[in-house]
Image 1 (tube, rainbow, N blue to C red):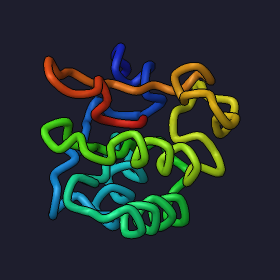
Image 2: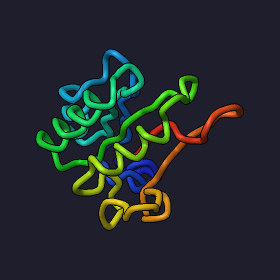
Image 3: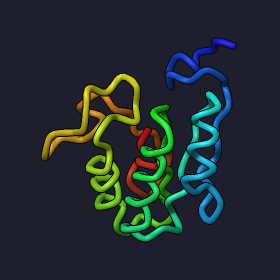
Image 4: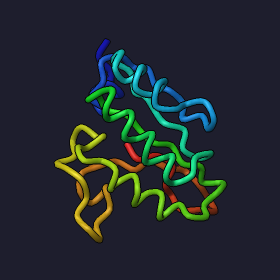
Length: 128
C-alpha cells in the first residue's frame, strides 16, 4: 500500500513502531524495518553508549530506514544524544539524506528529518 507516509519514509507498509523506552530495542526495530515498516529505537531509557550500540545493531541487521526516539520530557543531554545519533549513522537512516552531517551542521540542514513537538524543551524527539 502506497501512502504519503510510505513515500516520506521510504518504506513499503504504513506501519511505524513506537519508540517505547525499555521495549523498542534493536531486535524489534530492525525486524519492523526489515518487514517493510518503520522501526524506531526507544532511546529515552538508554545511556549514550547503549544507544550507539543499539543503532549499530540495527544498521547491522537491516539496510532499511529506522528512527531513534528521544524523550523531550528529559531534555538534559539531548543535544549530545542528537549529535551521537548523527555520528552513529555511517549511512543515512533518512532515505533523502546524502550522508552523515558535516561537523557543525544538523541532520536537518543536511537533508535528514528531525521531528518533534514540545512547548518547553528542544524541538527534537526522533532522528529519522
